[in-house]
Image (spheres, rainbow, N blue to C red):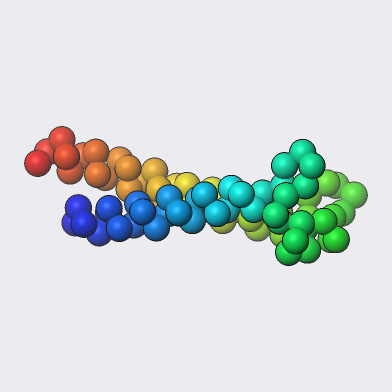
Length: 77
């Protein structure tokens, strides 16, 4: 179980770094390379940015569960 959580933690950590770098900052970001800037609506956020936000939050939740699970395994074992 600990090995599975460690592998999942490494994968989600790497994916989180990539997803966070894809977000648009103050001066634009890597997400504009993939059509984020071209499809911006008047409300401010494009569909690409909203989906990127959802994916980042989902990955962060999995990462958090891995951290808590590993903490509990270390404490018990």
